[in-house]
Length: 510
Image (cartoon, rainbow, N blue to C red; front, side, top):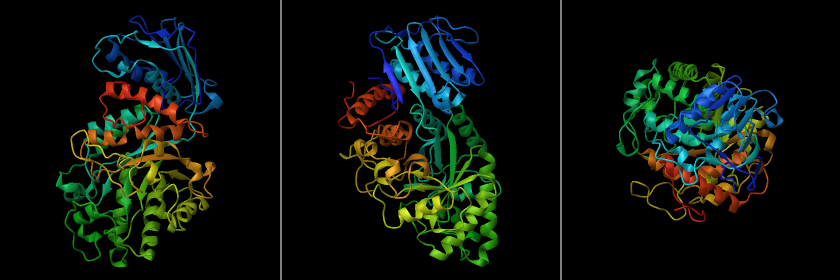
C-alpha cells in the first residue's frame, strides 16, 4: 500500500526491487525553470529531519541523488500540476512540466519516505533507514481548484497558525486556502481607507474571546508563504449580510445611522448593508474601497464576496446589493466567487463562480440558484455541508484536544469520514456536471473552535477524503484502501505535531 493521499492516478510499487536509500551523500539535482526553488522547499524539511546537508545543485544525478526536473513533456497529458515519480536503488526522479507539478510530486515523495521525515529535530534515522520504495507514479489532478476554507472571523487565528494550516493542507495537494475574513463577529483585514473596520470591527469574536486582525503586511506574508507552496489565497469579504462588524464600525452604513454593538454570538441572518438610496453613496464607496484594497493585496485570480444568509434583506434589496457588490468586485479585474444564493441575481459578471453549500441532496431552490451561475457563464465549487463542512461533529462526539466538545450538527447531524469520502461532486446538482465544476472545497467554521489545535482536530482526517475526491480520478471508491492510506498519513501528522481525531474504522498505527 503506497500510503499516498490523495491516491495517485497511477502507481506501481515494485516490492521485488531494491528501494532508494537517502544518505548523507545525497544531493538534489534541480533542472529547469523553478526547479531549484521547489527543491529548496523540500530540502529544508528533509535537512531538519535527517541532519543531512542535501545541497541543491545542477549537473548529472548519481545513484545516491534525487533529480527534480521541470521540462516540457514530463507531465502526463501535459497537465499543469501533473508529475511523474520514479524511485529505486538508482535514485529518485520527479519530472513535471511546471514548478507547480514538481511541488505536487514532492508531496508524494514525502509520504513515501518514513513519517520521521516530518520531524524538525533530526532525532535520528528511523528503523530501516531513510528509504523510498521502488515505485513508478504518473499523476495529475481531477480538478484545478482543490480548496480548504478557514474561518478567521468567528475566532481570530494569528499568522503562524495560518501558515501552519497552509503547510498541512499542502501535504494533501490542496491548492487553495479560502480565508473567511469578515463576519458579524469580526473584521480581520486592514482596509486603510476605512480604518475603524479593524478598530471597533475587529475588537471581539464569538464568546468575547478577544479580537485581532491582519495588517496588510501580515496578509502579504500569508500570501507569499502560500505561494511558495503553490497555494492560492482566496479572500472572502462576506456581503451584504454577515456584516455586523462593519456596521458597528461605521454608522453611515446603517439605514438608521446608528451603529449596532459588536456581536459575540453565533446566530446568523440579522445584519445587512443598507440598500436605501439615502445610504447609496456611503455603501457604494465602502464597496469600491474595500474590494479594491483587498484585490490589490491578492495576486490570485479570485475574490470571494459572500452573499449567503442575507435573511434581513428583502429579495429586491438583496438583488440590488448583489448587483452593486459584484460590479465593484468585477471592476478590480478579479473573478468573483459567491455562495450559491447569489444566483438569485441575473446580473452577475460573466464567469462568476458559485460555491454550493447545500446538501448532497439539494435543499429547495439551492439547485436552481446554482444552475443560475452556469447559465450566466460561470462554474461551480462544490462544498456540500453534510459531507464537506469539517466543523460538523464527529459521530461519537469526542472531546477536543483541549477538553470540551467541538463542532456543530445542523448539517443533517454528525459527519463520518465515510460520508466525507463517498460522494461525487458531479452528481450533486442536476444539470451541473463535471465540465461545469471548477473544483471542491472543504470549509471549517470556527464558532466552536478557538485554537489551531481544535481546528486541526476537526479537519483531520476528514479533509483527506475531500482532497482525494478533488485530486484522484472519478470512479468507484475503495474505502478499505483509503483507510489504510489515512493510517499511514496519521504517522506523518503525528511527526508534524498536527492534531487529528483517530476515527473508528481506520487501522491507526500505535
